[in-house]
Length: 123
Image 1 (cartoon, rainbow, N blue to C red):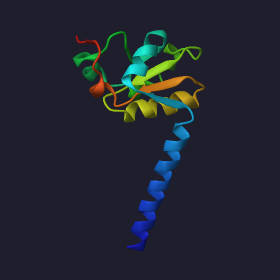
Image 2 (cartoon, rainbow, N blue to C red):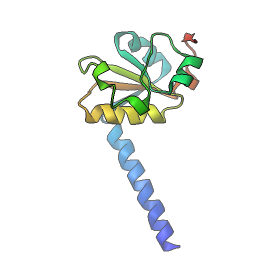
Image 3 (cartoon, rainbow, N blue to C red):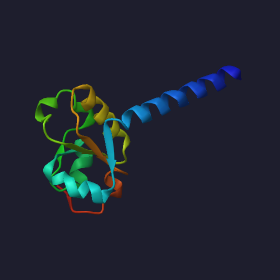
Image 4 (cartoon, one colour):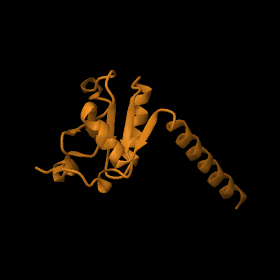
């Protein structure tokens, strides 16, 4: 039982550490804040292509999280990167990867695509 408690406490500590470290390089924007800046940024949908095809923010490029490492050459380091996924977990992981590769101006949509009320394009 004590071992289980130690594991749970360790997992919580790691999660808190990642959360606070991530706040140093990733801005989480409300939909209104996101709308104000995404046209001047690189708007990236990190969901899988089948999700993207069902609906995405107008002007977004699809670079799935699973392909992000291989497709970094498609992103410029000198322009802001606006990320979103269905919720927020994949965009946060994509932001970690981008930060490790030297990208500095990274933002994500709070709540992800499921909270988006703006224009949507479908295929």
